[in-house]
Length: 414
View 1 (cartoon, one colour):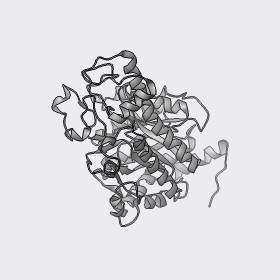
View 2: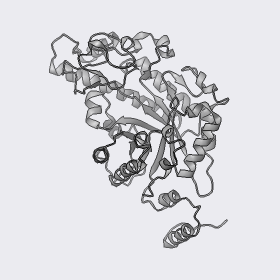
View 3: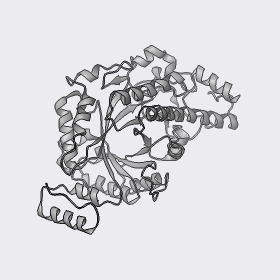
View 4: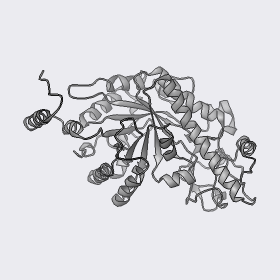
């Protein structure tokens, strides 16, 4: 086999000659070689999306084959959702892990780790839906921890009482941004379960590149209003045990519906809830890093950092700054190309773009590929804008909408 020179202009010249003389040589390989820094190209792969990829060994094989041919570097595979698991575990309902006839995560890792000539192995991250249970009222965690594990609003109503779509009649013009059941981040047992799931994955799968946290926040109401001092908003976290812990730790009172709102109390209540989410992320990071030092902890985060901070109590910029999040994957889902570019530029301000440290926290821009299945050129424009803004990569949501659509795989060469 011909050996390429390791450095210098001769290497670049030889690569150019190889490209010009071999039409089958993949262009994305050249991009990665000549790029001044590694650029992630990743896919979110849903467990219960339209394709149900992890339910079939053949679909898992097709995923890896297509991803490798397109130059994908990372896969975020959804293996824990709604209290169900696509890997063998005692921490959830793991019946989905048997649908493929074998452990689907083990199969995915086996196939993705096989680097072919001129190609690197694909990194696989275990995607965990942390505090969201979607519509699963029978999730094992509710049965084991009780209904107090589920969030209550400021009226004392549990999300178990909410309709699973639409908005409740008592919401006074507000509705959940993501309808469904959310667990209480202020419940230590809930946080421990998320940490335990992440640890279980890292222990069982040595080739797993990382843990990817999703729905690592409180739910927010639409229209969005920042902070609990806005008393008319729909607000969450008012479980008796959590409110009592807050009062004990801060000597302040959580502002319930119908009561007067003291600004100092409201600010402290918001900060306390924000700290509960941050403790979950820190717990996952410290626990998994303690098990294996090279584990990458990433999170899918809301696109506007200020909205995330004020309305969902998701301080993802603080997680990057605090050193307990390796990578923020910003969910930049919009058909407005100009807005997408603005969001990318704003997100990249969360860390110094020019930092040369390869271990510095990364910011990857997640793009809504599902919005552009009939017009892929527009999502590629958003891709280029993210790269121009200094992003460390792009993630496409989701693989399910790309299956069978060849146009969705013609990634930009820059």
